[in-house]
Image (cartoon, rainbow, N blue to C red; front, side, top):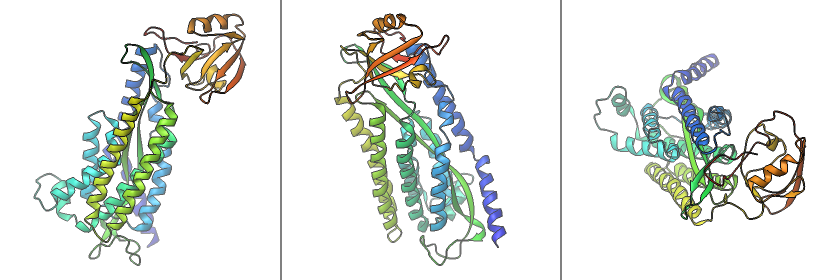
Length: 396
């Protein structure tokens, strides 16, 4: 019997590589990277991260989170209807076509799918695969969908906190007064591979001795590794990017806990699964709306300063990164010479081309000193992007 389970899980693992969403996510990551590099070259004549940065962040953390969620789904015996798998995939692709990647939150992809399934159940839909899948769907499976929504929402919160604040992209924007100021944007898509049980197959539903999700009748299931695409997008101009984005991730985690509580209660009162979907969608939209509203009320953080030169971005693998210079810090002195503009910073660097000592004011208002030898041919000298006097690139 054990070898049958192993065979079924290996077969289910292989299904990941024939799922269209898996390859679609790869293309979407490359597309986001291409647009980012194009915008950075337009603003600064140079890109910060490579065009493959988003692709490199697509899977690593998602695999770890997906493995954890797979354990939860297997232990609790979650059975997801095949109709839900189809609808979630279709909704995900349609929302991605808007290029508003924040709409790829599970709150929308899974939430909309729950509402669609609720209204279509019992309807005669003449669509290949979908019509038959809707006929076979049982209303007792809705609580599992609500719990899946909550788990994926928690995954989104973790991904935002741990990954979305890394490698944010600098942009130049125009303030209401017509001045050029800076901002940062984070756009990500993550893939969560997660084992779920689908009705139909050779295996009896697991853990019948503990029916967490009660299903009427004898149900046989098939384990399948399904890819779930999660997207994120946020603009930041009033605070440091890491501070603002991590705060958003924390709020999404709190929302996920609330949705999970409602989803668990839906096991005994299935109609609450619809309530869980509504709370997830309204809550996620509120997080975005009020976060954006608060951001608009703040003064521009990346604006010109009277004393020193503000760091808008640091190019990876550059001397600036090796000196641990951070976005939002202010360089006040170069080689002992006070600097107030980018031009003065260039001149101060010329005094000693082989050595660089900087006085830096960090985001907490504390002064620190960094120093490093400079070598011939190093990447764009220090490798810092500054806010230009005019809409041109400035690098030291």
